[in-house]
Amino acid sequence: MTGEPARAAPAPWHRFTTEPETVERDLARLALTIVELLRQLMERQAVRRVGQGDLTDDEEERIGMTLMLLDDRMTQLLERFGLTRQELNLDLGPLGTLLPRD
Image 1 (cartoon, rainbow, N blue to C red):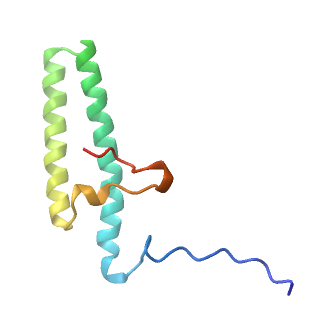
Image 2 (image 1 turned 45 degrees about the vertical axis):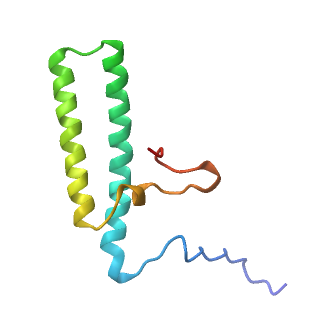
């Protein structure tokens, strides 16, 4: 023992890279992953509420339109950053993937 503090093992390079050329795309990927997760959760909640009959016809129409617009905007942003929805689905190792596989 040399009396030096133990150092944490470096993160595997294949999991996370910080290349200056890809920083914007990587940040967009992270942000869009969070937005996609929230979009899917909102969609499931809306389907559940519609199934329970908790919503008026007008509320169902507004929620449906909002979810369609959000999905369209997601598609535009994915195209802008050269990403696919599959690339947003983070692999959490033994826990599986962040987003359900469609």
